[in-house]
Image (cartoon, rainbow, N blue to C red; front, side):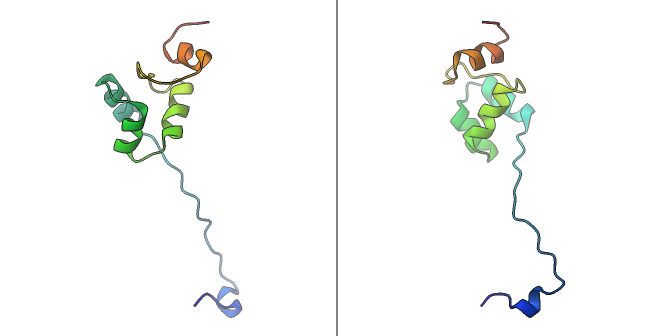
Length: 81
């Protein structure tokens, strides 16, 4: 059973788009305690990609064991290539 055309007349249906927000303070704390990107993502309920984006943008530090490209790792660690 779905909605009929009559049910939809005049209705505005919301888009189903979820925006995941990473708690930078909690992520930083977990990383400083030795957590991996995967562990941070699982504990905070976000994807690994969300954590990697935050690292690449410099919002959180990169874990020592993170698999990052040369430019991303040097940017996250505060050094320049």
